[in-house]
Length: 303
Image (cartoon, rainbow, N blue to C red; front, side, top):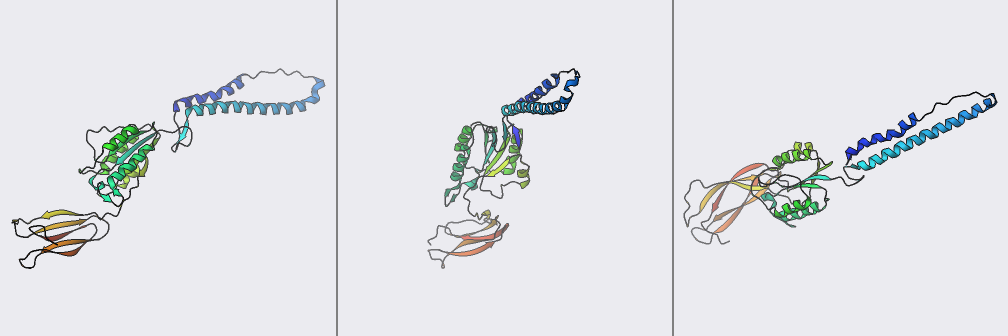
């Protein structure tokens, strides 16, 4: 997209018509007097007049073009990439996922710390004239949502910590969409730093409707099993010291693949200690929940 940083001065482009107006009003009326002695020179005179008119027309166009180019230069033309003219200021939203799933350890280290470091590198790439909204996915209701400098955005990033409250990208992107629409800058960008959990990620429709360039900051994500213990039921039994007890639970697999779960079952040889563990395998199909029964000891067993 092609635009100008200083559109108000484009009205001065009308000054390019001044040489044309001067040319039209400066024409003189020539009185023609016939002389028989110069009759044979008329053919030569027509050729010279034709050349003179072409030269005057080219000179007129050149003067108009010089004025027009000067006006465009003051208007500071630019593109979204900033390849023409001065750097076009950017309105950028950095949406940072600080949910609990980000606070886990990978081979490369803590995912949350890695995300903060890469976000800091992203903020360093902006110019001082750019305006940035740093928005944690889980943020305080008292946080002022407005574009600020990259220095303030880096301060907010430093203070951001993992949160255990639940929210979704869908909710936050509705706010981001409105703020970007109200921004006056030509360049509008949205950066998402997240481990892209299925439960929090938005519908693709709102991303395509976003009037901004969309970027995902790459993180060293590993395959996430996304298997959780979603409910536990003690069945109303009385738990007494020295007695084993059994619980019923539900295991939910929210990933796209079937998963094999290793389940421990404690048992003893008669009434003698120490207790032993028998492990069994349970297959939980993708996007499904399976019930399990676990026998637990009254104390930590010796394996």
